[in-house]
Figure 1 (cartoon, one colour):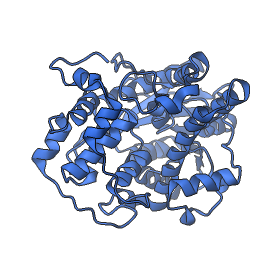
Figure 2: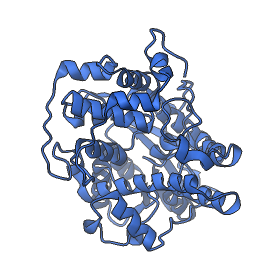
Figure 3: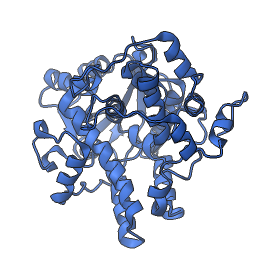
Figure 4: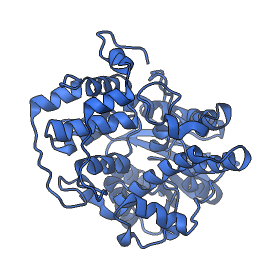
Amino acid sequence: MQRGLMWFRHDLRIHDNPALANLASSCDTLTCVFVIDPSWSRADHFQSKHLGPQRETFLWQSLTELHRALDAMGQKLIIRTGNPLEVVANLCMDHEFDLIGVTDHPGTRERHQVDTLVSRFPQRVVVSDAHTLFTQHQLPFDLPDIPPTFTQFRKAVEKKGIQPRLPLPVPESLPAPLAGMTSEPAPLSDRRISPYQGGEIAGRAQLNHFLWDTHRVQRYKETRNGLDGWAFSSRLSAWLANGCLSVRWAAAELNRYERNVEQNESTYWLYFELLWREYFQWMLYHYGARFFRFKGIANKRPLTTFYAEAFMAWREGSTDFPIVNAAMRQLKHTGWISNRSRQLVASCLIHELGIDWRYGAAYFEQQLIDFDVAANYGNWQYLAGVGADPRGSRRFNLDKQAAQYDPDGSFVAKWLTNEEPLY
C-alpha cells in the first residue's frame, strides 16, 4: 500500500496540478492537507499582517471550493493550524507517507519549507512545477543570467519561440483518503467579498467571461488603465495568486481564443501581462531575500525613511492627494485596486511622503486579495528605483494622472463619500 500526502499551498485547484496528478497515479491512499499559519495574523515590524480580512475571506472561499471539489471525487481536505513545516513533518512521521507531493513556489519561505522537507524525508518528496508559465529548463538563459529588465526578458523568450507547457486536465479519479484523519477547523465559509468569489470554479468562470462570453479581451489594451468597475480588466489576478486558476490554463485558453476568434494587439497585451508576472517569479527565484531589502536587487539606497503619521494618513486615505485617498479607501473596503491606482499610491508613498517602500509593500501584502509575493515586491522595487528598471525611480504627477484617468472626478467622489460605497 503506497500512502501519499498532498500538501496544498498556492495551488488551490484540481486542474493543472501535477503534484496531485502524480499522487493520483502512484498511490493507493491519499491525504490532502492545507495548513493555516497563526503568524499570518500577527503584525510584522512594517506594521502590517500577512493576511488581512479580505485576503482571509478569499482564502477561505477558495479552500471551501477545493474541499467541495475533492469531496466530489471521494476525497477530503484536511485543515490544520500551526507552523506549516512542523505540521506536515509531524504528519509524515505519524503516518509514514511514502510520497509527499508539493508544488514549487519562488517565495523565500516557501522554498525554505520545501528544502527542509526534502532534507528530512529524502526520496519521498516530489516537487512539481506548476506556478509559472515556463519551466526553468525552458528559459533561454541560466537563472543567474536572467536579464536585468523585463523588455530584455520578453524579447529573449519571444525570440526563441518559447511556449508555455500545456496544462493538465483534472485527474479522472483520486485514491481513497487515509482513514482516521481529522480536520480542524472545518473548511467552510459563508463570508462574502463582493464581487469576488474565491475558488477554482469562479476563477475559470471569470476567464471564460472575459474571453468567450463578452470578448472584452479584444479591447483590453484600450481599457486596462481604468480605475473602477469590473469590465475594464481581466480581473484574473486574485485566482492566479491563490492558485485557484492555473496560469498555464489561462495562457492556453487565450491561445485557443486567438486561434478560433481573433488575435489582435489587445489579446497579445493580456499575454504581455502574464509575461510580466512570469518575469517577477523568476527574478524572485534568482534574487531570493534581496527582493525584500531596502536597497532592493539594484543595491541602491533610496532617500526615504519612515514617518508614522504620514504612513497612517496614506493607509487611511487622508493625504493631500484626492486620487490617492480614493484608491486607498477602495483598497481598505474591497481588497483590490487597479494597476493604475497601485502605481499612483506607491509613487505618493515613496516620492511625496518620503516613506520606505517596504512599508507600502507590506500593507499591500495585508490588503490585496491578489497578493503575489513576486509581483508585489517586484513592482514596489520598480517604483522605488531599486528594482528591474534602468530608468530609476518612477514619480507620477498625481494631479495630471487624476485629470487623465478620472477626468469627471467620479472615482474620487465615489470613494471619498462618508458612506461606504457598494462596489
